[in-house]
Image (cartoon, rainbow, N blue to C red; front, side):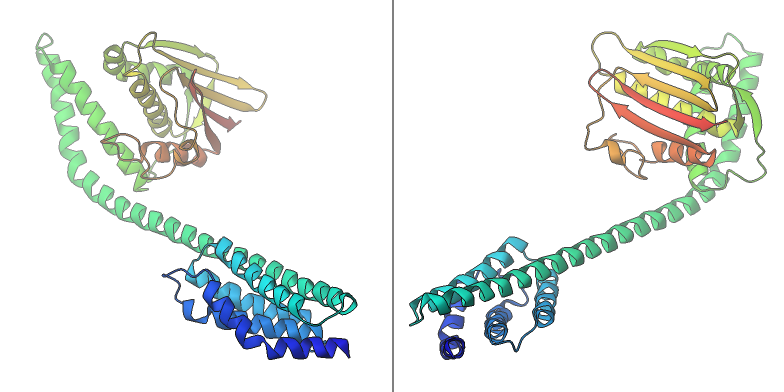
Length: 365
């Protein structure tokens, strides 16, 4: 009978406890459910009373916890405020019972049951809230990824159109610049013009690769890595001189690779160009080190520089499309590199410290 008296006591004082809860509860002005929070408190109060007399099961507690967690997630509130409000309700209820005419032999078991009820409620509510938040974040992540893909699709369409309209006259200009160089070998600035045209052609080719149009009618070939890097360094020579960088190459003469040579060339040009950019403002010795070797069944290429490091928080996203730290960058360079390397069955990673930044590429042989 003492338990019946205790539950009757709680039922009698429900209105005043709920009103006190309404006055003290933490509510955000942006909470769309702010007018219902005290009602949830009232539902919890009745849940406790029912749990004490055996009418309410743990499954009922879980049901209310899930309902409240869903509302809290929709309201996008701080989970700390929610836990505070639940603890407030627990405290008000316990304070009420301590003021009642109950002996310790009645009060202690009741307090244990009440805390058990609140603990189960909190565990289920916070777990459900966390699960819902993670689900929402995953949906947002998928939405962002879809948006990126949409942007890439649009970029691909633009690139295909741009290349079609731009590549033909560019090829003609490059051809005539060669003829001009042959007819007038001493004519000044022709070398500069030709190099700038090749640089422009390189940039156009990057967009061509993003558009996925560059794979048509291409065949893989077997090429020597040492010869490829010689071509690349000759192409980038004006940039190297401008930066005044020391280039060190340790390339195994026997190193050969099967793939699309022009695409692999694009990768190395891009990474070396980025290395030279990183060295642009460095004071002191400026170094770019290129290593290429084969070990067991793996081909390894490393391109390192001692320029400014890539911030730790940016390392995970440098290969994402449209990400760039350059004022006039497109954000597709390293993304294209990753796409090409993975298309060739390889991997590309980057490590960056105060001493040096290293891009490592590995291919299974």
